Length: 248
Image (tube, rainbow, N blue to C red; front, side, top):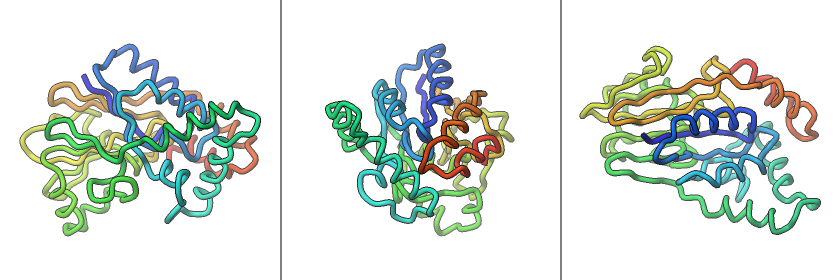
């Protein structure tokens, strides 16, 4: 069994619930598709907790904290600046600060297992490109994306779990009863978000792959605790807390 998680977004409460569930399943490997940080109130803790994974990829929030918050809106840019300050905390041990930055700096942008590709956003632009459900109405974009992987590509980034098919359909994981069987056709599969779901379901989301069976796991976590931390954090917009309750 392979477990795939993404978009933790500094939400330690959601992350702890997911890790506990992972421990109960004992997967052979865990791959994180990035955005361990950003938006939420516990970036340091979430980076430290991610060190246990076999692979963690770079998401657009890691890229933004390391370099520039390109194409970020004002609220997201505020969260990037706040996160950078937390990782440079002058009150923390400087060796610990350096370790966090080294972790981020060493992240790769893509990983392969046989004919399965893993990226944060899309195979075309691994950290930044969004592949949204509405993109099935853009056949040129989808054809280009599907041409860039062999069989299956797992992504996060949009926080909307579901399956894109090569004939330009998208199926929300909820309409699939949170299971999907991979066959000979090509699929782009979004695993959803651990720390900031956006499919009107505020439960944390991650995926397991066992044989050809993909399963989305949705887990309740104490989002009120995370919301309270965001409200109390000077520099993080309240909006980032409000959306946790709404799941959007």
